[in-house]
Image (tube, rainbow, N blue to C red; front, side, top):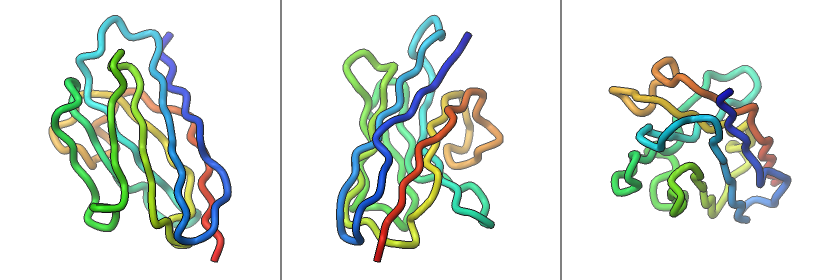
Length: 123
């Protein structure tokens, strides 16, 4: 059974930082793309950052570029999202996903999803 488990969410003041983690289990190898998505109440899910299987190619949404950093652990089944200079409008449920997308930011192209971790940014 494939599982993705996120952690690291919480409440932080505007301008603060958080580090999210996502661990994948149940997949035979690590040859899959991974990404972070977020969804705020009443809004569509949006791609935040993506990372290749080898961890050498990353992609970011324009709104987070330069503030967020996605990385992949040495074991390749773990990804992290370092979030700096957080803004109140970035309050959302953050979820990680794994799969083989042709477009990294398209949620429908991911096979496996975690339950999510809540990030709340207070003003």
